[in-house]
Amino acid sequence: MTTEFATTSEAGRPAPGTEMLQVARLNKTYHSPQGDTEAIRDLTFTVRAGEMVCIVGPSGAGKTTLLRCLSGLLPPSAGTVTLEGQQVTEPPKGMAMVFQEYARSLFPWLTVEQNVELPLKEKGLSKAERGPKVRAAIEAVGLDDVPNSYPWQLSGGMQQRVAIARAVAYEPHILLMDEPFAAVDAQTRADLEDLVRDLWKRLGLTLLFVTHDIDESVYLGQRVLVLSARPTVIMEDVAVGLPDERDQLTTRGDAEFARLRTHVYELVQEAKRGGRGEHDADGAGQE
Ligand SMILES: Nc1ncnc2c1ncn2[C@@H]1O[C@H](COP(=O)(O)OP(=O)(O)OP(=O)(O)O)[C@@H](O)[C@H]1O
Image (cartoon, rainbow, N blue to C red; front, side):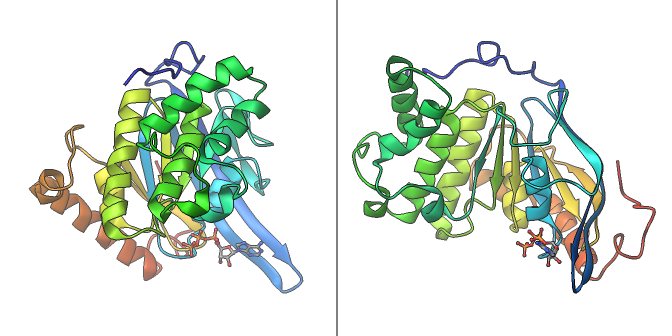
């Protein structure tokens, strides 16, 4: 395809491999009349430019809370989030997000093209600048035959492709994805996983991908951060040494894939039993 996306240097992104997102001793405690809930106890990790990092953890481990803190929507109770040297206190300009609920994140009265174009308008790009970027993004996600359709005329998987196109057209420095494929069927999910890996490689994206699905985290990630049960710490930062060229059959049939998924599965089971989290105030397993 003819890419109209900015390259890494054109877009002013940090050079690949440099530290981009730093989360330092992050704590989030919710206060309510019923009492305090310490959702996140102590999280420290770094994401380098160009990395694909997955986050898994048991239900209620604080994944949504973490993403809200990273995206500046929720102030931490302690600790800091720093993106490209700037402390995050509001939604950063260089960040885009894709959510699980695509039906709620797309505007039903706008066409595919108009949905993808909207953030570029908000970014202040002229019509002439927007056009090629919108077309390239729609082509990149394989929707070039339906640019004038409305979201409600498309399948769930296609709607999620629109949401992904909108995020990549914006040319974010970092893309956060919050369980983006949880609501689509298994086959569509596999296609979307491959789409995300393809876009990540081609566009030099930095990606933080939250999922419940252990296999998905190993298939997609270069690293998998495994969260403990609440109050959350990082149990382990698992390096995924699988080759960069991945496909659904070969990679998932690989002995190393099986070893990694077993390891992550055991960690999540341990987390569910409350291991290396709630009972470990020192946060063992931190980087
Ligand atoms: N606004 C809030 N007020 C009080 N407690 C909250 C609030 N939001 C979340 N919590 C609590 O914080 C903890 C973490 O919630 P969070 O939604 O971040 O977890 P999660 O890992 O995203 O969950 P799931 O995997 O089920 O989607 C939970 O115990 C939840 O009840």
